[in-house]
Image (cartoon, rainbow, N blue to C red; front, side, top):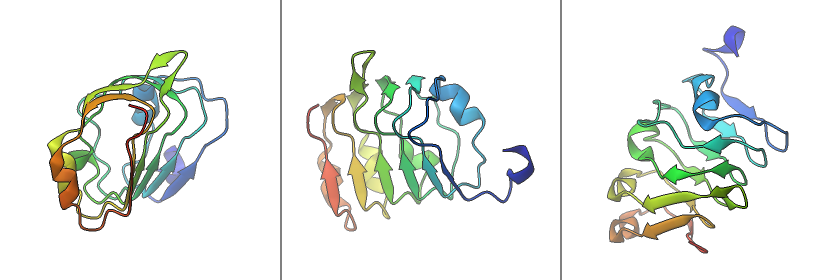
Amino acid sequence: FNPAYETLRAVDLSNNQIDQDVSEVFHNIPPSLEQLILSNNNIRGSFPSPLPAFEDMRHFNMTNNNINGPLPDFSRATPRIRELDISNQRQAESGGLTGTISPDFSRLDDLLVLNLATNNLTSIPSDLGSLQKLKYLDLSSN
């Protein structure tokens, strides 16, 4: 993405055969992105901690990959996020995302869609109910 590093706003690389560690993927993402779709690939490993800052990110979709480990706090890295879908990580090769959903998710005031289904998350903070714009919440099969 080097030539378009500052101007690129949306990237859709879904339904490819990207076979890479999620940390490597994040290393190449321009910070100016508003939309990132990487669904249906073979992206694996754990999210970097802390997540890189993507302050303009509005739509983030990495469904149907092989990501595992703790669910990171997206409230600091993507404060303006509207749609966050990291569902279906619990597959044969991966145990999925684990641990708890941070209470800080309740600071995502613009969040409309949160899909964390089919992972191994163990706790749902009651503060998610304070998200006034939230229209779709799927935490099934955890």
